[in-house]
Image (cartoon, rainbow, N blue to C red; front, side):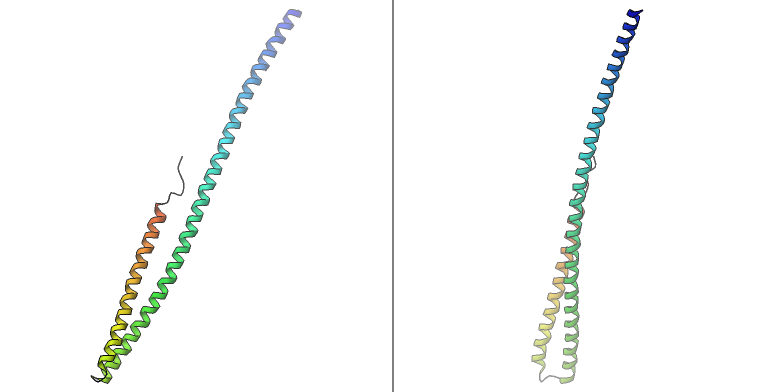
Length: 142
């Protein structure tokens, strides 16, 4: 009888020992999975932060370009008005002061042309910014 109890006790202790080992292995696996998940979340947060900074930079660049475009458009409008006034003066004055007015008109036209060129340069700059920001990877898919 004592031998039977001793044998059952040994079996129980063996079973409990195996169960403890199994639970320890599961706990270790769960701990490793948790550590990996934490690492992945930190990496995703870092990528998100980089993407957010890139977006802020792109927004600032876009606002800067928009301000410059408004200034150029305003300058272009002013030059058009000046050009129109000069044309009206030429129509009223006739040929006496025509050479001076033609010089002013030519300068006005050159200013207008420079404005158009500047607008085109800004348009290309904006397109490059857009293309640059589209090419930046925001998140890596794992």
